[in-house]
Image 1 (spheres, protein in one colour):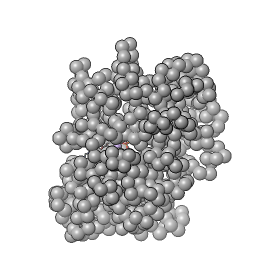
Image 2 (cartoon, protein in one colour):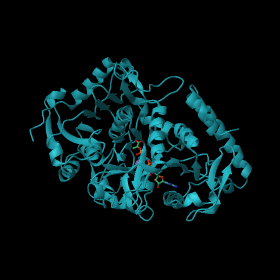
Image 3 (cartoon, protein in one colour):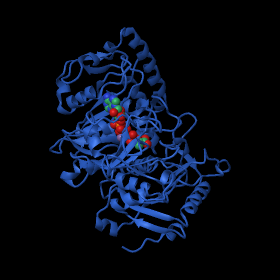
Image 4 (cartoon, protein in one colour):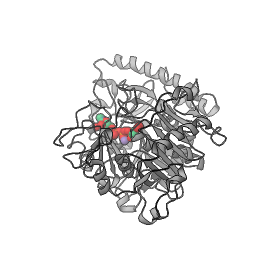
Length: 537
Ligand SMILES: Nc1ncnc2c1ncn2[C@@H]1O[C@H](COP(=O)(O)OP(=O)(O)O)[C@@H](O)[C@H]1O
Ligand SMILES: C=C(OP(=O)(O)O)C(=O)O
Ligand SMILES: [Mn+2]
């Protein structure tokens, strides 16, 4: 391969230590003598390296910007006073200055460059070049993105470039009209991302997801914040939407099924395909017995983040002293039952079951509700759930939120566009939708993973369609009254309260919040028509 010339990016005086480094080389680089601070990795008893990501242990949505230019102006769903979101506009002038900071930081350095794909389908994948100065950042993207074959690497022509300048700061952010010294900026025209002053790997991972959320729906392809798996024959695909921490990774990693991916997928006319090549699991309180597959994936080449490790390498998964958002990234091949080992690609046919995971911090939602097609649209657009501690800066306890399409932070177009594409695909495949509460109920405790897994089994195996059901007031949810493998006493959430009147009170409050939140979609006929499918007071 010809030696990579970085002056084409304006980066001068730098040496590329490694272009597409091997895992062996990355291990050497991350643990080599002389590294200090957050550059330094520590090997652990499970043989995976652990790193610390500094002050930023979660995403920084307030520092996210999209360049507002002639191409993007009429497409991007910009934040407004009436409906705030994370798409803050950045002028082309400010972008040039921010990029300059990144380029300066990366000049006269020793750098790592990784080329990888975002998207399992050749026709619509992004060919991404990551330019970073920290070895473990190169490791992280090698784990999380799709590694090209040897031939693909030789012919690799990037159509997106990420400049990770995590060690730089935007000193003059006030003058530039920015939020802080940290900046995560995207240019959808030149197809570049600049990352400044945050080391959190999630900015690169979710950054490229945001970009596919821009490019894919514009080509008529659904782009979804969901995990996906299929049955052992690769025929019965299921997708699990959910905000961070609601259970996408945990529940899609199922020894009875083949994993397609744990977080970001597209759905085109051929079916559901992964955008990523790896998984990014939360490891707080990780327990070998209840999550053996994720535990087993933590071995050499997996990369732990912000986990507490003793000097002798012993791991304490229960320790939250750095953050509750402790993580491990690993290539999907670390999971045994994956569709990629059968197909060569992380993809499956059109989904038959669509599951909305909501971690309800109020304890109102039933553990499972069977949704009508109209309810499906209403609850997808509403995206009610809780933000769990740690994934975003400033969130330290479960915080109820309406996150459109269960991933508002990553939507670049208006939410109705994602709903439209999803519904089109669901109608074609005859998919059914369910709302699953992986959060709290009247006991004050989180619904157990065991019960939730029982619910998922009943959905995917079809048993739920033959279960006796009843209707839940205010929401008109149809819920099963009995399911094998699930504690019968939790199926009606009212039964988990000492006094059902307490549930009524909370339900009324939640219903009112839904009604208020949905007002923003009532500006047109299609939105207005959905109100009837929502909660009523
Ligand atoms: N009922 C439940 N269903 C799923 N996960 C649960 C449940 N109760 C607790 N958890 C915990 O919640 C977290 C879910 O995280 P994860 O699966 O990584 O979410 P996501 O992939 O959606 O970000 C895990 O730490 C898991 O152990
Ligand atoms: C990595 C993230 O989320 P998830 O838990 O959904 O993978 C994130 O939101 O930064
Ligand atoms: Mn996940």
